[in-house]
Length: 99
Image (cartoon, rainbow, N blue to C red):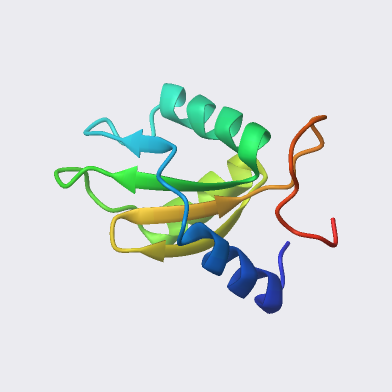
């Protein structure tokens, strides 16, 4: 779980990254969830972009997704979702200094 200070730091970092996962009309399908999981493993902090015709997820759906992935929802901005999960994978540059 990230605290408020970490959330602010992560939100600031996320403003410069491009979306690494795009969610289409099928929503958060099994394949999209696997792609998000792989992206979190490789990068820790990711941005997800939802297509215009895709219904925006509710806070409950995002919380469920975060629990399923073991991640934290940093913030949502319009149709963009920012997720963070610490990665123990070797060679990954950690985005938070205190992990």
